Image (cartoon, rainbow, N blue to C red; front, side, top):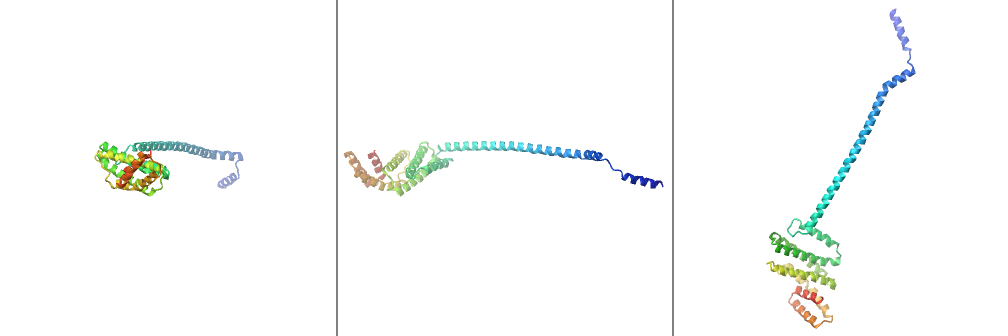
Length: 256
């Protein structure tokens, strides 16, 4: 009997419903800590992302500055290397850099000035050889001779290809360079270095033959003084002897 009453009372309790304000309050008490935690975590996440972006920007800036410093250092070193290379001689480590600089400069000149530039480079190589010999830099002599021979061969080849295409001023410029080369050769002979018997010298001398012949013909068409007529005869004699380089030098003198 007692058990029956207890069961009936429990059933009655099932019918009891909590008030709405109590449900809301209880729900808020349960959920608010969770929501607040989520909000806090979201804020912390935003702060973390912001911090990462800030440090990433700083790192990027530092990296860019390092790259800029590295580039500036590399550029400075390259400028110094190119500057130093100008004082090197054939056989030196940086001589190839000097040649590269000369080649880049040659590429910028007009086609009409190419031949003049070829002989200027050959003259520089002979200057290099002269300095090497005078300085008794024995390890540089063979490379210096080789560089001169290569450059004079290139100039001679281009001269042969352009015979008949050059005006009087171009011929005068070329003659001046050849005169300087011949003078340096004579100076080198006093130091025991004779380049006159080389194939390159023979090829250059032979290449000058049609050039000298043309100049003789042009001079004979002009009105000349007695002194100039004597010089013309001397030029003809040198031409007949096959001394075309010497003949061209005389032509240069008569055209002054």
